[in-house]
Image 1: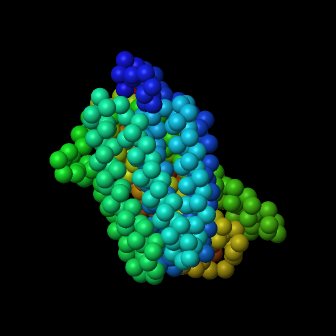
Image 2: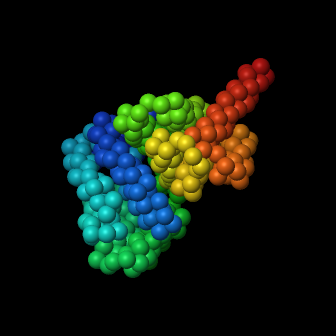
Image 3: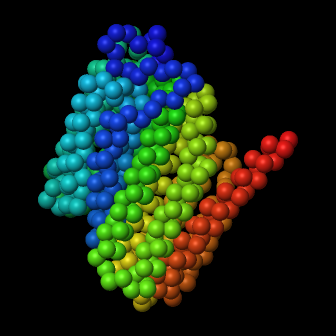
Length: 398
């Protein structure tokens, strides 16, 4: 993607060596739709917190994450400063709003609308990318054809699910999600064209890292906004105030764990990697998913605790209050292992402490359960900062 590689009229970014491609205002504008999507997902889980409801929400979350991250890959290559690409993003925003609006009733009366919006976004964006690719860039065009083939097959499953009802819809959509999530691991194999090469998936690493970090900000920001709105409607008792402070400090701890060391290290690592595409597929496409899911689940917990801080913790409160930080830490420890090559001890200890806490969580009130998980997250954040800071000092002395 060098400047000399871009013919007149091409819509690809001009990549300058050793220079980070900034995230454009059009991309940031596009992301606003997903603030709404994240809110819809957390509220859907809050109102349908049953085993079946959790499965429904999981399928919808996987779809939302996948359409966003695929768009991030495409805009890593195409230039959003150009009018056709901007119009693509604005069209995707319309589709994203329809998608987000239908989330609460996607397994009820608006399933077909959800399926049409999702399939149109996935297939339409990929078709645009394919037609925008100059013919001399054979490897890129073949990649687009491969992906379009896989997404067209899954689109049939999404639409078929939208036309079905009950268990049939769920199983068809699970098949569609599974098909799409295994496609990168299968390197989008299609007859005649074969597998996609790792070299063809090179990305501008700094841009990819920044885009995914912004989605983490979206999830954290949505949680804080919902907590603030919920707290404003409550009577300000000592329990409610402490619950609100615990939720805010917990969000800050999550921010610290992800951004203080991990996000910057990930950006530096992928920017220097000779196999940026492989690292982007693992660390950013797959492993950021549990990070975001953990934040969303924690937001559900925060709202439950704010509204009912006293009494014994029920199953919903225990699962969300412990499960949110747990899923987040599992995602971050795997993400940091992918970029550093070792498992962060502080994260492992945090995971063990959360699992231990689950044994007697039912004996705690929602408030004190929330405080306990927040303290664990603070310990993880401080431990990592101190341990990595000591390593940097040791390297500096040598």
